[in-house]
Length: 156
Image 1 (cartoon, rainbow, N blue to C red):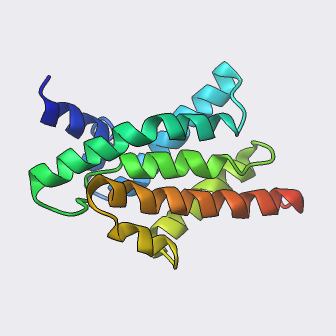
Image 2: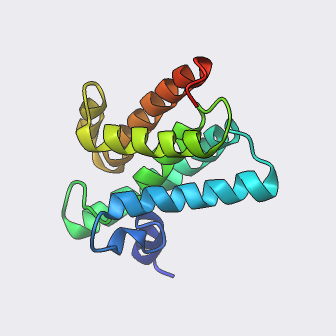
């Protein structure tokens, strides 16, 4: 497998980025499907997703950088590995995992990723794959904090 093909496979999250409508949302849903399987069948806890996100960050930055450079665009819509990492990071804030926290993590992350309020938007200015991934990690971190606060008040 060539370098560009491997980078494309990772950055599009195994083809999710080619979905014709809402590829970022599809990437987030794929991340949740994987996370749900890890929770249900491997007994993962929310904090486990921090380590998964950390481990996947460098390959995601590399793949995003290579794919963006090959396409000649700063942040192509078909790159969705950043949504995968941000979605996993949002789960770290869950005080318990139930349908409400899964839905909350999804909605919070997608809203923050789409709206990109300050300071999340500032991370996009970082160069190459770092900028592509960093803003979604920031959105995931903010979503995790909000989810954690909601859990502390028994809102889910």
